[in-house]
Image (cartoon, rainbow, N blue to C red; front, side):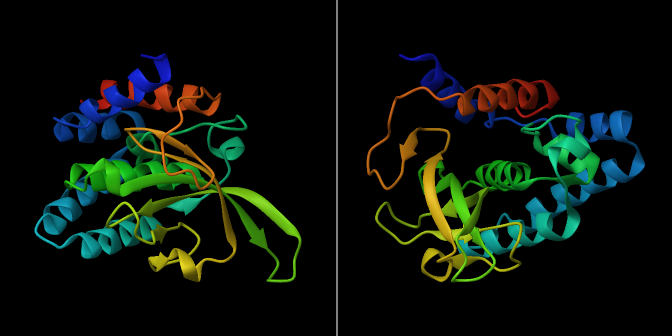
Length: 214
């Protein structure tokens, strides 16, 4: 088994028995009272969302992070160009970039029982400046697939509502991944090719486990 696939499988196991008390304690110790309050609100939101149908869970989780967190570049938050933050780190700072929003939403929905096969973190090229613009930039969103061949619903930190992919003609998928595999472009089967991006995913896994998501 390749090392990146093993890391992805371990990620699924790492989400099995979270220690939310430890997370909230670490939030207070590392980031202060406001961060602890945010983690407490996150826990309360998940408790409220536990009995909702999956589409309603998507809306609740998307709204929570989009309203609670500010968008900021990694260079400002972490002093480096590309850093993938854990949900605790993102809530602790009260800010994140598109990867951080997407990871936090993915992890939260997994904790709420949404199967991994219904969720993918999707790297896209996002068109900016209108339909006639030729300008695009790298971006990450979270996709929800009710069935394997369903049109995905897109959770995006830049847009408040969850929208079907057909209403996001500004997004052009490059690759996607979850705790079970990685897909390049529009491929229907997972690819085992290693990428440099997955080293950051493994690093996020290690830090989440040390923070209580284990």
